[in-house]
Image 1 (cartoon, one colour):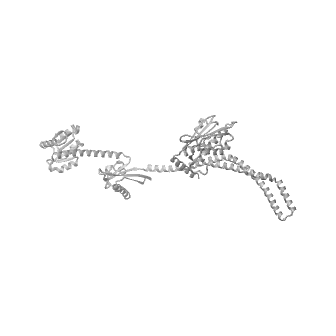
Image 2: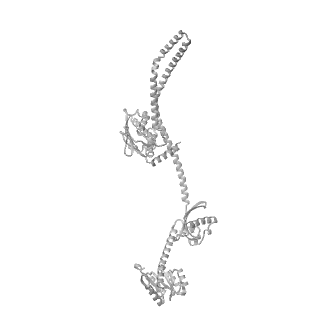
Image 3: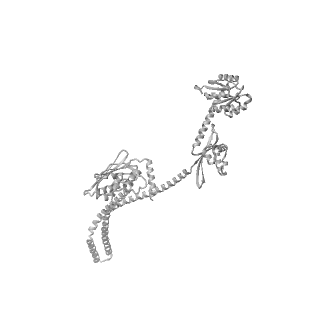
Length: 572
């Protein structure tokens, strides 16, 4: 087409008068025409088409050197992309219709059209040719697309007749795509398979919705799994005109997924076993800690229990003397009524001797102090038991609770006293702290691990003087903080990055599991969303810093509680 949308129109007409009439009519139309080129023979028409670009051809089929449809065929062979409007005689209307079947866009009967109908036919011819070209282009794109797809593709019309497929699909049936066109499923498959295909095809056509189905069959002793995606094919008005079937071999994918699921099940079982093992290791570490505390707690309780037992023996002896004396007094009361004066005096003498010999004045004065001392001893035992409860929080194992870190430190110091007192003095600087939600027994376990490690580190130096462990608590904007510092030998740089690794220990074989700090790190960072930091200088000592969030968000609390619940089930 010429610039600015102007048309170059080729008029092929051997009759001079008819040609002039066409030219005059063209000039009277509202079309924007750039040039009208005339030709009277097929030969000159071909030459013109070879030499210049034409936008529309008005073609008389009967020329001196060509007649009928041969004229159209020759013109279309030379310029297949150009729209053609055939001009034919009134008696040749059937020929005009045949011309459209052979590539013409429109036909006009001589003497039966006016300027408007001519312009309309030209416009329609150009538009129809454009539509045909777009359709052919889309069809070529579609054919190119499906021919290069890795899947096999088949299209059926509403009657389930094959209208299009790619070579990948036809080759499965030993045919070319052209040989498959016009066939139906019953030409290739068993009645059972045809019934299944037909049912799903008709469902797609009826509902206008795509569906997916899988089929399994044996081939050469191997199971083949095919996925078929069936999609409705709709026209411009949205009406379903057929179904597009895309077949894809899912054998490897399905088998891979099945293998992956089996592997996942194995991993889940392995993970479950590892959790059980981890839980058992944690329990063993707790038992080891309890073992460490047992001697100290026993020592602390032995002293008050020892003098309570001694007081009990003294009280029992005192009570025996009092009971003996009391029985003699009972005998004396009997003699008052029936005995002689001599008998009464003898009994009184006996009572006086028993009183003197048994030192009853001392016994009577000693009973209350014995009770007071025993009561004090029992209170000391009660305090030790309460500290043990505060340390272990055995009545709050499952749920998070409000926790006073300072009280936890004090209870833990009582429990660890026997492990610390031979190697270090403990200095505390405990600030007022808000209560936080946590598992108190777990936090106390962390403090105990750090305190015992500090005492053991100080004792390992073989120093003559006692070391010092300093405990300090305070808060920042978001955390309560506990610092535990010792003046022991410190941790070497190469070991500092490993101290939280499971089973890492610098203690001699048999003196440590290497789990204490690893478990402590997990308790603080994972279960309580806090931080456990270490800073150490060789020869000067080590500082552990515990940071616990003052407020745990709800998601963290739920996550921790869920994990604790899961672990509690595993540990049963």
